[in-house]
Amino acid sequence: MKKSIFVGLFAILVILSSSSTNMWTASAVYDHVQDGNYKLNAEIRKTINAPNIVNRSQYNLYEYVDEIGGDKKLKWKVTELERTDNFHIAEGDKNLKEGDKIILKIGSDPALQLDQPHVWCLVYVNDVMARYINDIEHGRAVFKFLQPIGINYWHDFTDSTYNETAFLDYYESHYNYTDFAVTHYNQTFFYNETGFFSYLDTSPFVNQTQWSVEEDVVRYTNVLKTQVNNITSVEIIYDKETGLMNELYYSASFINGTGHFAGVNLTFIRLHGWGLTYNITTWVVWIPILLITVGFIVAFRLRAFQKLRLYLEARKLARRE
Image: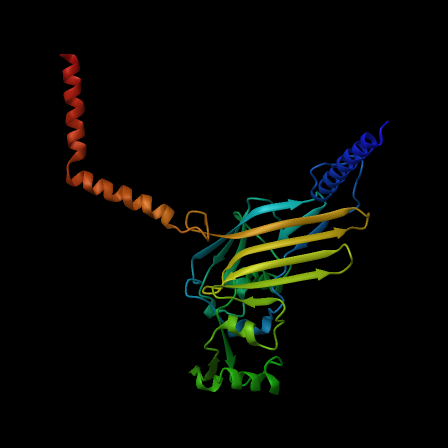
């Protein structure tokens, strides 16, 4: 065999083997091809944690946008979910699947019970309530979907988080909080006039590598590596004006106790009006409705329907003759 022919065949063999290896790896990762003879000893079940700055003692300091009030529904959709059979991603006690809708039902004004989000906000997966291990986990789930837009500070700062001299000095020099004081029911509140996201962007008490405040959105990113092959990453994009979560990207990969790969990729996206995603304007629905409404009004004014009826009757008579 000639040397050139041998080299050519070898190159083709390398290319084919490389392609086969990539396809096999992809199948192992996302369960497109199953090995029926392999049985796992246990499944992996994970939940998406809220951004790690949430502190239950801070709940009564937060302010929410006006649209977060009683009898409101906020919706998100699982637009993409890839996982291995032995890996489940959950919201509360419900395993999620592609196409599921996450619904937050706001039962009352949060300002009435700020420190009890499990009372004023319930989480549903489709039409079934998601239940959490305890009220703390429920509150963290709410905080994942809904960030506050403002933060207030009590006058006595009795909580250990706020009575440190460095903390008070920082806010006095940066926000001059004593100039923004309002007293209600014999309690004085000091307002951060630049809002909660400004606090995330500037406070030395927040991990700045995880929060990025931009012109219209705020990004939270966190990557956790417990071992070489055990990696979890999450990115959450919030609307800066409302504090609502626009998008969430979650990825996790593990080598479980059997030595087999387990992993998941998940994407959430916020919905508004008629199930449209947040980045599609509702005018795509309102404009046709307005055009049809205006068309009906014009038709009635011009008696178009009566004229059409007379035309059809006249045509019938002409056919009979």
